[in-house]
Length: 114
Length: 115
Image 1: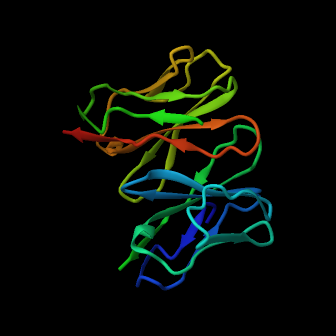
Image 2: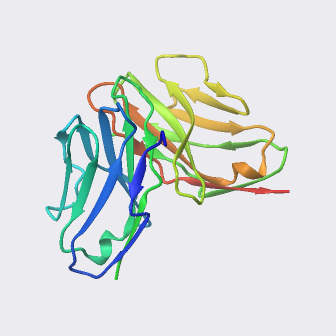
Image 3: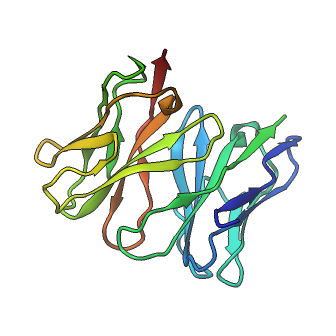
């Protein structure tokens, strides 16, 4: 498949548990973005990777959120000690990283915290 | 900080008719990009159309066109000959043209298409 993939598609967890969300970008795309889509906050930027580096993590809502990217490819978003307000759809996007380049989105992971 | 505003939570159109979705934005940058993304129930965000701020000519993609008014900071999307498959959430988005280009989204407009 040539598109951005994310796993799992849906995740239900209990409050206080840790979760990992995975994003596989399009091969060769150097830029990778995480966004969160929730009813209360709309679509908001979380973090950006250029290669394996994250130049800006200012969108991460708290220190319970972290992300990494390895080999300039796969990225994992980790949420520790989940709270009910973390329930949302987490979207990943990748792009070639050049000026004005289009971001290609994955199908998202719907996270439900009970 | 840049902001994007979509004032129409929901719009309705009949098949084959034309509908216009509104978007305004605020930025102090002179060079930037504007986008319209479509999100069907599958959740996949699909790029509909993109406009570069330094280009005066309005972008078009088949049945989709924009009316870009830079001075007014307005960026509306016109869908002509609407089809049932156009039903979705539509998001207006902004990104700078320098540094990393995170997207700033509006709150979205739900488009309903009736036969």
